[in-house]
Amino acid sequence: MISNATIRCEMETYIREQGLTMQSFAEQAGVNRGTLSAIINRNPPRKISVRELDLITKGMGLPEGELYSLYAEECFIQAVPHWRRLKPFLLRCAETGKLDCIGKVLEMLLDNLSHIGEIFATAEQMYEQGYRDASKLLYRCVIESEKYNNSERLAISHYRMFQIAIGKDMEANLRAALQFEPYRKSLPLELLLDSLVELLKIYFFIHNWNHIVKVSDELIEQSQAVFGERKRRKSNSNSLRADTVRLRRSLIHYYGQGYLCKATALQKMGDLEEARIEIARYADLSWLEPANTEEEQEVQKYASWAKANLYTLDILAGRKDTLKEYVEFLRNNPEEILSGLATIIQSANKYDFSIDDILWKFFDEISGFESYNDSVSMERRLRLAIQMSIYYFRRGKFSEGIESCLKALDLAVTTNNQTVFAEAVTLFEAYRAYTGPPHEEVFKTVIEQMRIRTTLKYSMQI
Image (cartoon, rainbow, N blue to C red; front, side):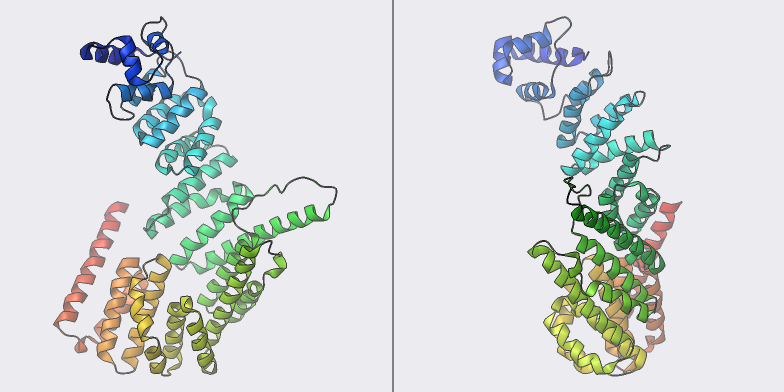
């Protein structure tokens, strides 16, 4: 039974100090007088619901959730309360940001894990409603209690913790990915597909191309499993069962991401012919039978990306005869310009040909890239800056080369790309004779920024 002793004392003190009667306070709080009397006077006292507690708190002029801490303690004074009372309380704590109260309830529940299923279900509800910080507390409770069991809810709890951890700090994202990845195979298929796509994004940022190929193959294989199951159900006219795998996105999305990521990783590793084979696999995904206009547009999207990436392979292979056609393609597909220009300049540096006319054509677009601040664009801007620096130095345009080199250094610090940072420092030192005091000042600043970042990272590891 839930004891209301401390809360009841608070109410009685308030009523007395305010000179109120039971009736007047009941009206002020919006609580039935009989209910209020039963809470204060009955022996044993009537249990307080969370809704009644909120009304009483408001009636006493207290901030929302002010009495939750007392309520959490009193819930466990005599016995573990029924979950139908605890769940509404935990949800209200999530809504009001009373995370300490949630922690207090979970701590008291540690000796009785019979509610672990309800705790998990409530965590999922909080997660779906956007109360991520609150849900983390419940997921941690599930993980602690299930750590020796290879259960589905343990895997889902690790996956949710991974999703919650993903943010702008790519090092933190990688740590979260490494912690989650061993549990992914125990996820239900509909969550597994999404988790593989999210892992691919993180491994792309650190350029772990071999692992990307492995995860991409898994994504393709699992997508094929879903497709095969759906085909079997469709061909069985006697089967009236609904589709057991409810995907968040279309199969076109998962197949496309698998082939796209694998092809890109192969390209980055220099295996251009294998990359070309994988690109052909997502160039036409109409065999997946798009069910609506949105899915048809998705098929077209991957077809467009395939065309762009085939151009990329041609350019990287030094096929200058495709440059004019590729430039026209970029003109008609502005979203491809940033990545496309980086590829063109990389090829010009490798095969030593001039692209001054192309850079001039895209002068306005290049200037506008400064506003592209998402993680993917930042990496592309970095690649463009370092390649432009190399290009300008090779063409004897030292002032432009220094400016691009400093831009690459700044972006390398922002994205924490140690490899390009070292490359840019080497370039700057090689052409330092062409720098002036303003350049030296910027160089000194970015070097100090990287030193501070590296020192902070090291101290955190200790």
